[in-house]
Length: 165
Image (cartoon, rainbow, N blue to C red; front, side, top):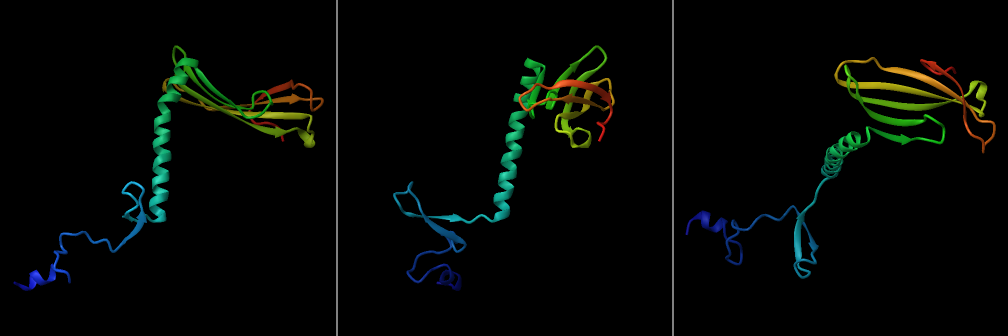
């Protein structure tokens, strides 16, 4: 028996180099193995965050074909932000003779001049992603009046560019 044989044997005479080293493991009861203790590796906080970020990225990648199918079938996707007309996120297909691509518009609310709550303006910014042709991003402002809380919005003006402050 050599010195190497002594190092691979434990006190009870069994071979120890054939068994994995579970010194960095914790034990947890498992319902799968009839309540026997099953070792598992502890995962650090960075590993969990990375796993969550990876799952979010994977979910977004899985949703992209659904968004593309919705755009092809309906020609646009509109998400309304509030009850104010035009206050929405809109994504639509541009299929003109010389331009083809996707347009994205997003609107933000601006209160009326002097803090007048019956007057509200909607600033809409439009950008384009074209694979054929080109277009410059644009913006416009639509102002609405609302005489009472229960009343309807009536359009007052539409101007090119930013809303007045």
